[in-house]
Image 1 (cartoon, rainbow, N blue to C red):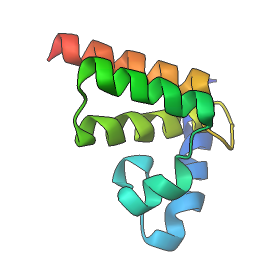
Image 2 (image 1 turned 30 degrees about the vertical axis):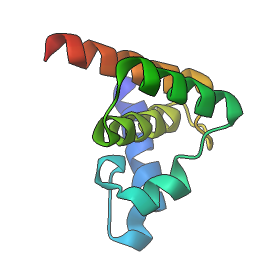
Image 3 (image 1 turned 90 degrees about the vertical axis):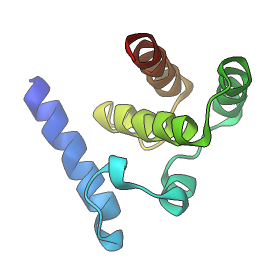
Image 4 (image 1 turned 180 degrees about the vertical axis):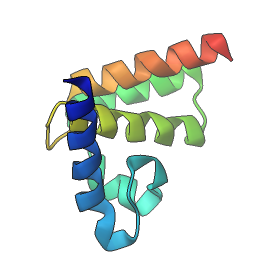
Length: 99
């Protein structure tokens, strides 16, 4: 069941990014992120708060957005919802603790 979800998310990513010669969200550059990782107002506020509190670098900021996009793909969601963003931020926090 998990394999099916992952394969479905990978297919979504390949189809979305194929016109740009990319196959995964991790390969997105700034222009792709602006296009495919749009947040609603609550998401913008959450990411702004986290950026201020943790002092995230631009690289960390984009990595969170890419991960949130992947989480949304796994959930079969067209848009990145606040829940997806919060999960990505949580993983980033774990990454910082382990690193």
